[in-house]
Picture 1 (tube, rainbow, N blue to C red):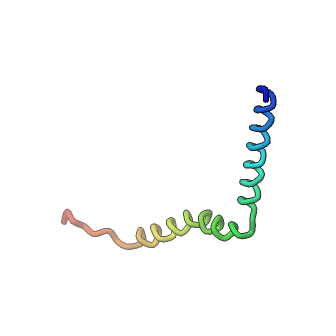
Picture 2 (cartoon, rainbow, N blue to C red):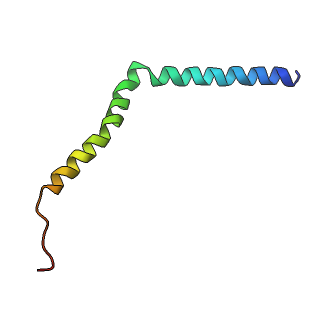
Picture 3 (cartoon, one colour):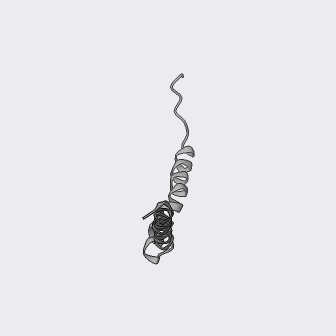
Amino acid sequence: MDYGTWRGVFSLIILAIFIAIVFWAFSRRSKKQFDEAANSIFEDEASSTTNSDKPESKKDE
């Protein structure tokens, strides 16, 4: 096998890995996990805004 053949085999392996990642990313089984991860930042903001509504304690007085 020469260098060109190895490059072709390597390209096919990389293509197969890319297609597998695309199918995994758009599969229905992964959708729930991705939605939870996407919305987790909003959950953190919601909890921090409720804490900011509380009056601050005055330690200096």
